[in-house]
Image 1 (cartoon, rainbow, N blue to C red):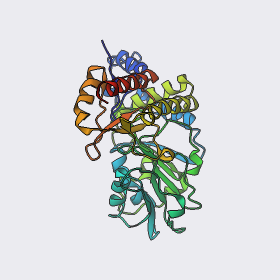
Image 2 (cartoon, rainbow, N blue to C red):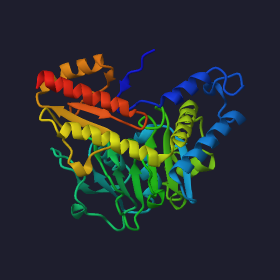
Image 3 (cartoon, helix red, strand yellow):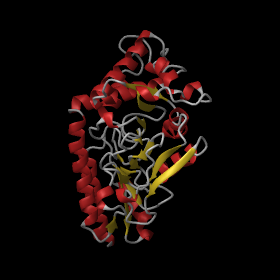
Length: 360
């Protein structure tokens, strides 16, 4: 069997040891005589899987006391509605930073539930980046400040955590979750879809501070109600059991690899290599200012877009797949999440250099 290097932005590459373990356990999980996907979510076996996954995630992120960790469904997109339904409370409005496509979607959804103050917006032309702090127009009375930590499509990332003062900070971390250590205590709420960096599609992790659980609108459906889900151990309805199980295996893999500090070192090194190869070339260009460049999603364009098809064809023949950029921006995009080995980045850089030599 030959494995390719999969640069998909999501669903994305998973650690091979995790896939191998899942394959080994597929028909008979730990002597139960059944697959995890066949188990009752309320049975002892799966409850144990769920509890271990939560414990491992709390350990990896050093989640402090006073936070709930929820394993929900609907992807980050569902949280675009769940966040305002749960957190607006009796506040007049919420603050949102707009740094790209996913920020825009979150803003549009939030406006269905209350007023939104767009604090600042990124430039729509390159070089793109996080808006300078001096331009932010925040409201000290806002219900919360929301930002997308990493815009998957354009590769714009916050390389630090915004200071929101006394206003709860909310972050969509789907594309950067578990790529490095973070100080969870600086956030009121974090949410992330699993399919980028820690599991298959169908699972969303929400980490929410206890004091924010009582703000929900009376019209909030139970399945999206953070307090209701917390009281039900994320099993108010049947959860995405197999995705939860795979995420748990990824958490264990991360621990065996040395934790998030080791991941941060690897990810910084992988990204630096790839950006250096792009910046040192007149043939390739990255459209993001250096201070806002994503570690996880690296977009780049060719000097002549007529060569895009040949580039993708050659890359595929070299075992480098899913490099086509998002349809809204074009070009190329290499997503280099935790499970992408450094050898994959090296292979991409080698191919890029060879393609430039032959076509530049």
